[in-house]
Image 1 (cartoon, rainbow, N blue to C red):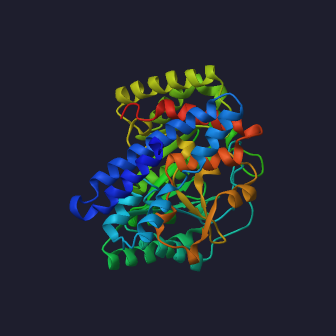
Image 2 (image 1 turned 90 degrees about the vertical axis):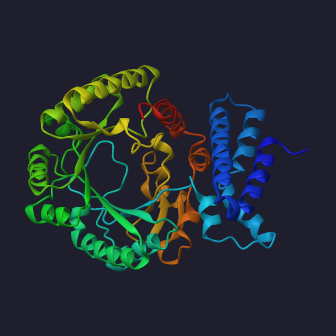
Image 3 (image 1 turned 120 degrees about the vertical axis):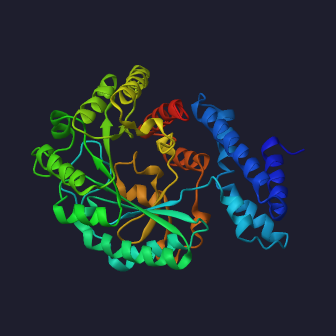
Length: 406
């Protein structure tokens, strides 16, 4: 007799066979319900006390990771020839419409909480172009390219080239493409700001709220403060009319004062603000409770001050530690963002979560991952050792915010 999870897989397969008749809505609902059940079961299993039965349950659940690929194989084995609508239904809710290009590892800062290794690597225009073409082959009509680093403005020439290519490719494919650039703001001169405005590139700019927090958490590579250069870059963004949001990272020891970050940023004139809790750090129950209370106060302050608090919108996807996005590194390796926020050894992380070489990757959607898939990967990588506590802490903190205020 089949168990409930295997029966749910059979039902999903049957629903996928009927996509032509109902547009895939029934398959999407069944897959979404199975995703939720798997995530809840694995979350319980990972939080259970150690023992033979708990270990067996974790192994059983881990066997369902990336089950969508298994369903596709089952369809093909039956002689089915899934078309675009079936593939869209199968991979709906799996992955993201965004591809991140890590265009350089160079950076002027040495932030206390950053896990991305800093060295002199830079993406070639050819690798960046391969990433853009891969994304444009997606089944989705709306896609997004994000430029990350390091500091992507230190590789602005590569960014410009891939933006032009993506614009042309999107027009040819009948797609809409958005661009997002995450920056520390230090290299935001007038020319860069004007370019970002012209191309309507959205900007995420990191600012830890006050001069003292910025200079202590985000010092320069030489050990100096970064506040003055950041303020100048922000002013150039505003003057150029670039759409941007400010991101501030809150450490566990500052949990009770998160709302003060938002208020300080609002006082500086920023109208869209996101507060990120530090990942890869273990949050105590008291710190987690203090953060939840302080973020509730931040939401109240945002309403009073007339600013947008991104954490309270649908754009904020929790739990962050189960991020579904894919990143292309400078050498063309595609890896899952899942481990970036936890693992301090970047090379080891990239190898653990590697999925393809962007120059030879298959259908973009087929590499997608659900939160359950990502938890299974993380539990396999960090189920023991010092990072297990941080993983479970970050997971539970994120789950407490999932869906809140939206």
